[in-house]
Image (cartoon, rainbow, N blue to C red):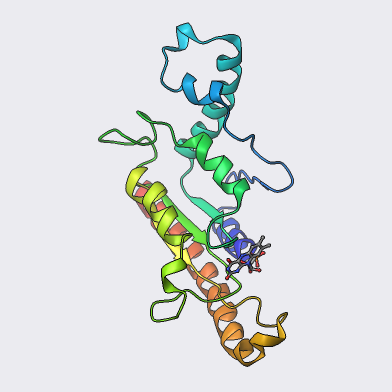
Length: 199
Ligand SMILES: Cc1cc2nc3c(=O)[nH]c(=O)nc-3n(C[C@H](O)[C@H](O)[C@H](O)COP(=O)(O)O)c2cc1C
């Protein structure tokens, strides 16, 4: 789904820059005490360890701040986001800059989240209350950091693999096809909206 989005986006922006992080192949370091406390201290007082750790955070933060649009793949792992994505968030969420101020630094940036999951947590399903991907990302990236979040939710992706879910394969296929179509349409719409804003 993220590939479909990227392809559609690049067709509109052949000259544009895409910064791609494969957080599984190249994980962002988990936040350290030095990286955390550096965010609350005057940079002039940083220890060498704080300065190095903080510089890594600032690089990721600047990428986010400079992005015209953000695309995040957020598969559900045990009801929540993968730890690799959480590590990225812990780096870029910085009190007084990306959150906790009247105008957070990436406020208003459109962010599309592909939130795939093996089951379904849609309203009215038995596991509705266990959905901690959309709810969590909305809280931290949407409400706290001010990004304009939109979700694409391919669900029941385990249906073709889990015999106990075989009845759900048609629903999985419908969800997959809709998510693919949504990814392409949303990327094009977003590219057009940003182009007309810039004009
Ligand atoms: C460690 C792990 C935990 C998972 N936990 C859940 C879960 O709690 N609920 C769920 O619906 N699917 C769960 N899944 C299934 C994935 O969400 C599903 O396979 C999803 O489609 C993976 O994303 P992708 O298709 O974008 O790679 C889990 C998968 C893994 C690897």
